[in-house]
Length: 246
Image 1: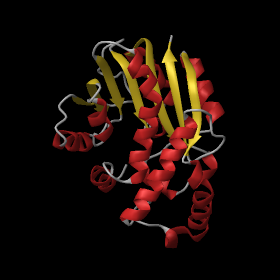
Image 2 (image 1 turned 45 degrees about the vertical axis):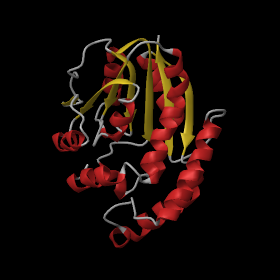
Image 3 (image 1 turned 135 degrees about the vertical axis):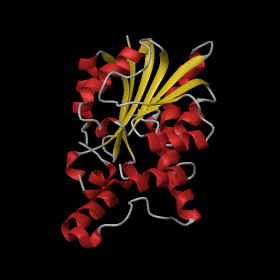
Image 4 (image 1 turned 180 degrees about the horizontal axis):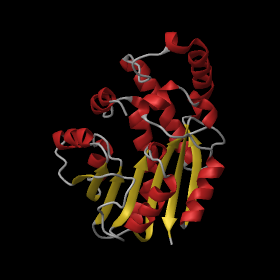
């Protein structure tokens, strides 16, 4: 990821609808599990970035962050997060086997050369019965220059992702697309940008929004989160999978 986009994430992820909506979707999936467990839970956020998800996880137990970017972890420190580790995620992670009750990996797997290796490491770090929550960008056909700017290696289809998770030894207990309400608009704009080439490229796809529009998009995402509690959506810009290590 470009260095300037890391600082942009730090500035935006606390309030910008895209980031807030994703965290809400994840916590909606985690809530039944968190209510059923006793004692202090150990969380690991893989690819913790600038630390907002890690901050929220810390409200429920002990939370450790790991990321390949030393620059990102500087921003974690600004949030007051001390249990963060910089490490090359392409090699064995400096985390104890079976240490975590919950592992989250939000829009990280697509950045790694070997997603199979990363999934095996998640499986190793989790306790038996532990939960893994994963989000990734959907549909290879939606690939644009923005994926390149973010450092993506791939986008995913849900069926292929679930197959990878099963092969690693996870039981997938929930799977869904999300950001479904944006899919038609995203297809239009990404096709337009692809056709127009460099003339349509912007500094960032996280465009500034008036507060009212940000609130409207958050309302739409809240409705979508409630739907995903009950049903799996058939299409969307991203995929969420909730998995258990057995």
